[in-house]
Image (cartoon, rainbow, N blue to C red):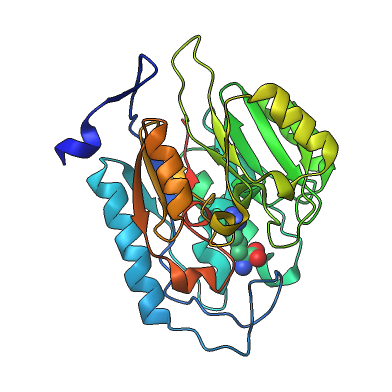
Length: 287
Ligand code: ARG
């Protein structure tokens, strides 16, 4: 895998991959049996074996990139548990648990907190409704926080108190992009000191005040098309050089190449039926 380990240059400075540690959940019980987002159609059949195969491709991709991948056991009757990003938000060895909006997913909160506790993280039981890294994205030193459909903005204050970081509230306005990680991709998870972490985003997913914040903070951001966002192209995971994306997001793939990143496409079409993609299946663990 020399290609993926290589560094590339963009306007002089190198893109440097960093080793990541993540948590995933095998989709052994994946199906679509209820509807809590516009992507889900319970009347349409799903293929659990195909979901497992596609998930496995993502898992292997991460292992090939040299990531450490921890696994949490899936639970029968919790079909959305595969979307591990919603299981919490982990930073500085502290795990802020999830408190899900819809009753169908609520048992996932304690299941993930139990895993965090058993694996040496300091667990913070949430008071406020929040869906973990689906709505909290660490970009450099700040935490971008989504609200509007799932996480309550009160959880943004709770996160600021626990982690002692600046938390910037962004309101989502399009129900198809109901979690922040469907509308923003973090491209540089561990920027070098003095380097600005960059993002990619879908402008139409935000209201005017959110857009103003994004434009001001990230003048060099990649603006992704509605077409690429519609295959959850933004729901991607970067190590600073390699960016694992939906293979169908061709325009975004090209934009990433032009900026010196190495896009790696995977097909998660079956998991898209639940309204999730690459990033949804990936929870970053930061000691
Ligand atoms: N069916 C799940 C839900 O609606 C999908 C979650 C996608 N996760 C994410 N991080 N965007 O909650």
